[in-house]
Length: 607
Image (spheres, rainbow, N blue to C red):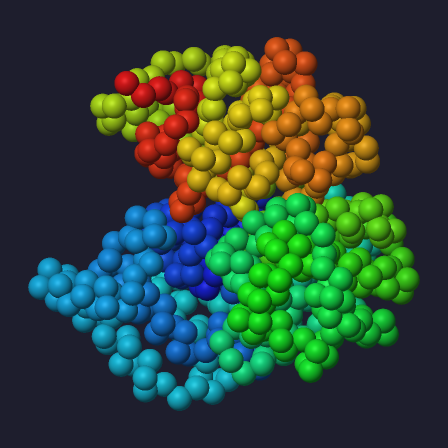
């Protein structure tokens, strides 16, 4: 049976194909195909890029057809909004997200000019807008319209699923966080936390084996009646991000990074804590509207930022997040004592929050779902469909690494290489990991492209930029000339599992760069570019079974430098998504200051 699970449209849309007969999984986010970061268009670009042959069932990771939570995700009007977006893409033809940052005047001018050269797309655009204006929504109409919309789009690619399923948003976060965890046959608590979905920003589930789970807590994301104002810890963090002049739902990691340079302001932090109440009986997080509403006033927040400074402003929301979630989980542990905790949802990308959970709660084993954001919902909806249809999915527990994307043969790569006149390449064969280690040890910044692509926001050695963390200027070079990120943002290390106990004060064998640990002080000076200002690092601990070639690279690096540690950041440039195809890799390599590209055994340099 072939099941397509989806975050069908909206922020971080994605799909997963679960083949229960072949025991295979394929998962990819729309942004990897379109190269538009956090793309909200529907999954049509993915279906257009791959031949899925046949799909028996399809599922979407939302279920609130009444729109009680005011998400708008399952409204009938949303189907026409997505048709409008697709028509605009045909008109604008964006390469990256910057191409979509248009004023209304600019957009209308492009549409007008396209009347004469792309009339069908312009007609489709105005037709969808007109049809949307006629819609009168009801819960029944919403479900019928969305079901029809999904089937109609799939039919264009000769895909005829027997049924469309819809599941609770937070359950679609929680289920893969448990099923893909190393303790998926034991008792565990699963925490989900994000901005909002299906009317809630957090839910808590208790799992007792693969077929037994129950909801034990939930926190509603009450709508404040305007724009994106929802009572939600995730939304509060969004507003602090916005007040910093950054992009909400994208740049929260910058707030987290800058927070390490500051200290929470007593008054601002105190106001946040006073406005937040945890109901230990219902296991819900609630807000006093009178005390919290000023935090949804951007002008007021900007004044607070000016009063206390950027670093302390960021530290205030970061410390609040850590303390509230730690308090909440400690109360949950009192009612449901278990060693195992699974975490998912967009806020789960906050590595310092996860470190606080590890250090300040009684949970012994913690698993942060690698595709923690909304793209990961696709796997959740696929798993739930398989469960409902009595399919055996116990084999998923044997897949600890999220290498769920596509791969390319050496022959395919060579054909692409030969199309570029401004590069040269040599065939290193199977020796490429050791050659890459030599280059990195010498101070070169290199890129890796091999094997199956990672699913989720982290590059884990297959679509990565790698460098020597022992050299002082490595971080500055990558930040200023390749990634074009603020200087305060740290980079993450990939580290041999055998080095973990040697280098860190307290840690566990985490493989996905989704939690920070504290490095022992005696190693910080040797590895300056692998450690943040607070002495933490967000590592990927690597064993040979996880990624044999990447393991060989790290072993060779250790033989040269004395440390099995490499800087590892995602292979993409500023404003672009992680590379998917050999063509993407070569274009990004040419467009920046990466010294060498190692792609399926070939070493590539510029002419």
